[in-house]
Image (cartoon, rainbow, N blue to C red; front, side, top):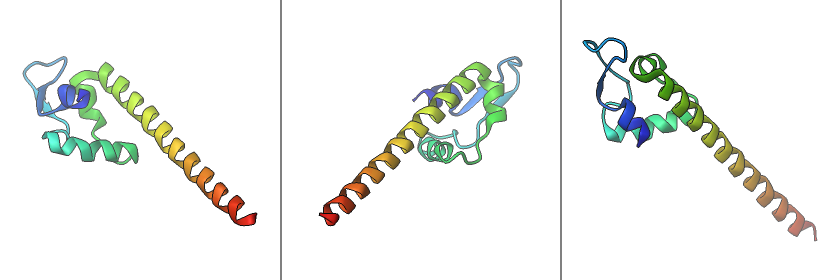
Length: 93
C-alpha cells in the first residue's frame, strides 16, 4: 500500500512542481504486485523516477522491502533444509 500511495499513478517531481513523472510498473494497482515480485528477485525497477518523486521514502521503502523479502526467502530455505534432513533421518532409521 505504501508503494502505491507514494509512487502510484502519475506524480509531480519533488523539486519541480511543473514536471510529472510515473514510475514504470506502478501506474495501476494491479501492476504493483508483479513489480514487488520483481523487486524480490532484484530484477529491473525504475529507481531513477522513484528518486525524483521522493528520494527519502524510495530508499526507506526499497531497503525495507529488500530486507523483509531476503529474510522471508532465507526462512523458506531453512525450512526446506530442515524438512529434507527430517526425511533422510527418518529413512535412515
